[in-house]
View 1 (cartoon, helix red, strand yellow):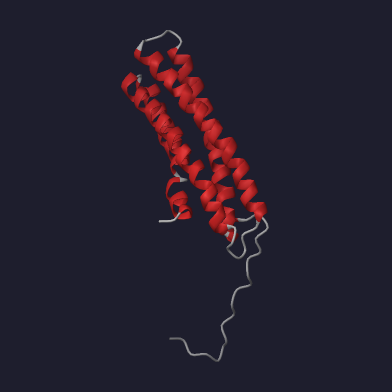
View 2 (cartoon, one colour):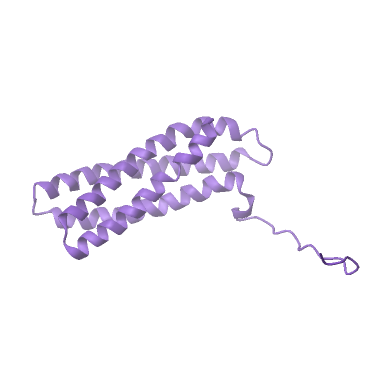
Length: 163
């Protein structure tokens, strides 16, 4: 497995973990379950740690894909900038989740406000995760690029037999 392959394996995790954790957090808030909310905090923290793997493998992946036909530095740079911002946001989310976990365990009075704040911040992180995933996909998947021109449909020759 080369660095580009490893990057493709781990780069989805920082996007997926916050989505899962938001669903769990909402469930915990609805059912007023501290255990469920703590589970969401742990998943946010794990998601921020997976961001480290995605970021550290990105440079090696860049060295490999920049030599592939159709890949331009422009797409790589856009993805790199988006990924840097997204990773910082995931680290902040992980730190806030540590605080939220501590506040929940210690049953601090501000815990409920912190839970809502972390949930809202997580939604922002998910948005930037989507942006990062899209810019990463555009590097190799020309069909998702905004300027992609769909090819004209192939017309079947009327004289050919259908098989």
